[in-house]
Image 1 (cartoon, rainbow, N blue to C red):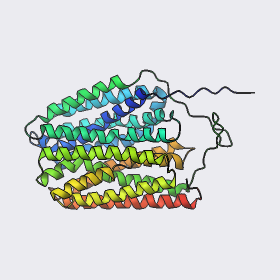
Image 2: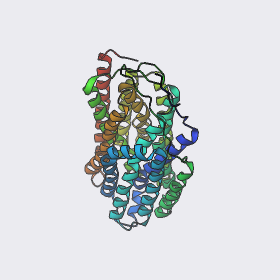
Image 3: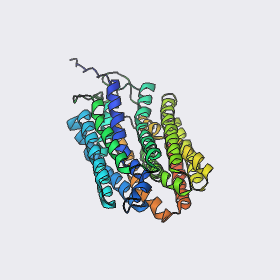
Length: 404
């Protein structure tokens, strides 16, 4: 008896644009608060500890809800999930703009963790409809570039309002842009289906063998640990870069320009790294991830020097190398566990969100009332340790005898 295979739907440009727009919408709030923290502190009691608490709350809610959000997205469809996420982020930003104290900002940013938890499952479900190879690799890089694009927006706003502008007006402007993201999201709940697997591990609609899992549980544990430590460093960067620069005597306009340049560097790095992953897959992709993290650690050290040149060079290195690995890392995860992509991605994404909780809190605890140098050195250690764990994961992969 023959079976009919439903054709895989085409993932259009608008669908990918909707993912990118929504990812920017849910990613920009913590970066915006971190970037405008000094301006906010001039109108109400709001300092580094409050920034850390707000950002940690955002990531904590995201981490707690991620397992449930995946099932919710599967039930309602990715387009509906993206619309809800954009709407929730706009509402949370309105709460930030209306806040009259630190508690209001913390509550609003923590709430945005709810819509943030919806986006990654929806994104993965949509991108799964793109065929393997460089096209999918570039799509991963483009989507992951949405996050540094959010920091670019925050940096641009700092350059505009850094002197005498109103931070509340800036937040309202971003809330309006986030609400407009609805226009980029396609209507409908159709989702790309995954090809059914035969007992022999063949794709039912392609007849091609699926690569076996490699490295065992130690490889997965190393990937999760590496993602956790890398996220500790990466999420701290946009949250405290502006305060570090202004503490070192750099003008708000110059800090905003550096943040814009760093964000652009990160976007280019993510796309190029993911594009190269379409050619050098598997264990070699992890080598590239580890190298980028090690280079990022040097950037964090330069940020800790407190000098103007160290701030400029360190910011560019930290953004481009210490925060440009995400798309290539996600590609490596799918290659390491082709039979359980969603499950393993859930584990590594949990590591990323947990790092987002711990990173800002750790930085604020070390920095105290202005000791930014030692705090950045601690962040550099986390990035270096992450590079070591990724190198260990690669060794596990190589020892399994499967190197692509």
